[in-house]
Image (cartoon, helix red, strand yellow):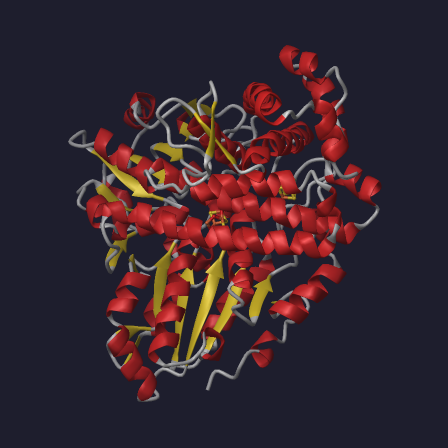
Length: 600
Ligand code: FSO
Ligand code: SF4
């Protein structure tokens, strides 16, 4: 295996024996193989768009667009394939799915789609396997002919043997240019993050065919000789950033089906009784849990990135949405052990079970998530197993409500969090904010957020916020917020009205941060980069890569990023991103406070 897609990659270089995340070599290689096969699928799907043709199944609208005059009828469910594409890309993201059997299923389903799309491409475009093989650049190896039978048998040793030719190491050998391979992977990783967000939005009923179409185009590009050109790869990476802007907008609209987020106090002290903890990002799955547990005497708590769920009127209306338990993802093993109820993992970030995990029998995954030895729920429409596990577990006692001794992390938390200062709320209060700027009471905004992780260097974000002057406002989002939200009370309010710490929501609410910046720039009649705004992003996995590419695409700069640099970005690529896009690595710039525009 060779994986360097996330920030915790071994020694900042690559995981080569087993993942720091707990991913086995088998799973890592099956993921490489899956991305490889999705590129092949994409080549044949994208060929229709490239030839100005749409494909159409039954009464679905033509894909990718109604506007293409030439529409070809196909005998397979195109929309289902599009959703499958997003889900299977999403499944390869860090801390999503650790189950090799699920990847074999994904590979088999991919093979089914490839066969159908190829047949259509052969009939309508005259494309053949030979044509595909000739059209590929040297970074894309053809698999041996035994692949189909090995996959049918599900022989994992043979499959991983074949998968060896689809990984980064092989590409580095074949292409002999680490800059190019790193830039190709930047496209893939950004796409993984965007696909995850798009899958969340799709589940709540918001989608846009241009997102699917772009995903096929980007993956097809990665098979072509064009992908051997560094500048073309970087161009494609920025297009990933562009599509991710649209995707985050879709997700923001999708989440708005639960109402407009509003300032809300979220308790962190538990109530006595049976309980379920829901973690991940997915509001619709949380909604399903709340519906299924209505009037059953079970309290529902959020964990990690789901804390913002409390701010949505249609979710907070459930009286048994009782509070929040625990902090960022990397503390989950300790926190889940202490949670006396059932646990549902809706999306990343999942950590695999370790030997004797005490919550082994009461943790469930759903959607694209999965882990070996973790029970998987096909859908959140049937939650009977989760409810049974909650009822069988002890639940919180009266004593727990006094002081949450169960969790050493919670012990240091304030009794509640104030969340829901969403972009909609800030935009609504823009006149107040502008007045405070004009009166000199706000001198600078900081966006400090992104992902959290376990490294000590991440205390940098806490230290940074602690030393900011009273005239600064800090916006935060993502699970990186847990580095700073315990400072909330001490930070106080500007002029007694505007909280100095504004929690914008999940990492995908970077869309909201951009809207705040655009609104302020408009009102102050200046460009976004002329605003008194400093952006400091903590990154961990590929959703953060997608957000980063969006900010690069929007030319928002400077952009401080840390705590470590992505292992897949070579020095030459970083130089380009620093020079042309104002990316400033924190890893090498610990004097960042001095480098940032002065706070006063
Ligand atoms: Fe955190 Fe994990 Fe939201 Fe990420 S939970 S680290 S950027 O997956 O997705 O912020
Ligand atoms: Fe290593 Fe991250 Fe890849 Fe896991 S996802 S194997 S930690 S680089």
